Amino acid sequence: MFAALSGLHVSPTKSHLILSKSAQHNRDRLLGVLGFQEGHLPIRYLGLPLIASRLSLSDCKPLLSKIDSRIRGWGGLQLSFAARVQLIKSGASGDGYPKVAWNQICLPIEEGGQGFRDILAINLALMSRHLWKIIQGNRDSIWVNWIYHVRLRGKSIWIVNDCTGSWGWRKLLQLRQWNWPLIPDIECLDIIYFLPTIHGGDDHISWRVEGGQFSNQEAYALFHPPGPKLGWSSLLLGLLKTPRNNFILWLDILDKLSTLDKPWLNHLDGTCILCSNGQLETHAYLFFSCSYSRMCINVIGQHV
Image (cartoon, rainbow, N blue to C red; front, side):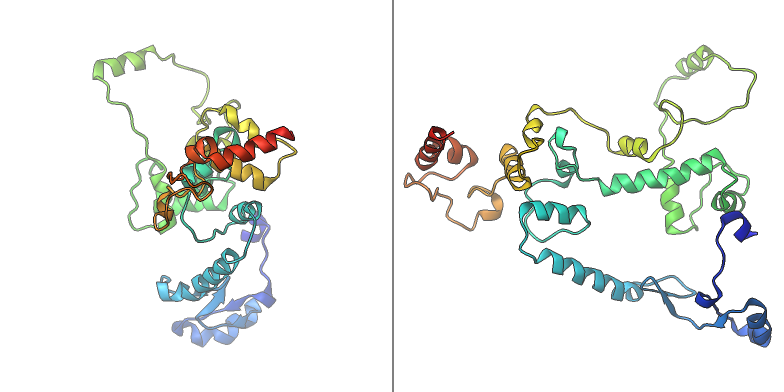
């Protein structure tokens, strides 16, 4: 039945039968009927041990150590700014003092960010799809049917309180939070009476966008709403500009360049090293007041 509904079939060469002590007397019979090899706990799958109890931190340490060594190896490379951007987009990041907040980096380029995806918002959007399937009552899904029979048991998804469920199930239930605004009872009755009653059809739930269909993109926009577009963002979208120059220009506009007045450089002498005026090296001084910088800009301007 499972194979007919899901299209997934068991591979005897990759499957093992793990028997409990109470089933040892049927060992030969079960192995002969199923055609599997006998296995013993613990076994590893995707780097983690499969055990009868919950995984502990010590069980996950080998996998975590392997991931940590990979990330540290990548972060130690001497990469350009463009390569670092690509590295972070690929899922790894190097050590260092953060110059720009992660929320700012996750904004689109038009809104003053670097176009990274907010991992938390993506996770919530993808989890919302599972919740949407439950709300819609998609009985073609084996998982939805299991939820209705095992977790809900005749209750509504909006009121069920399952404190003994798995960590993932409890996180899914947290997405249900919805707060009705505090309004007087009379005003609430006026709203109910004002709403027209639709006859001749069954009630149904629809997504609040055109077409009424759920999409991961719309859900992501709900958890990470778009903001206003900035005029200077067009400077970063030119086809002839290199990623390195774009990145430096972006830091320059945000006043995040590593000038000597920044907190992560407070162990150094803060005076400008380009001129001998003894002034603190700030963003404004470096680009608009430093005599050496003005001389360089004038020379460059003569050849442009």
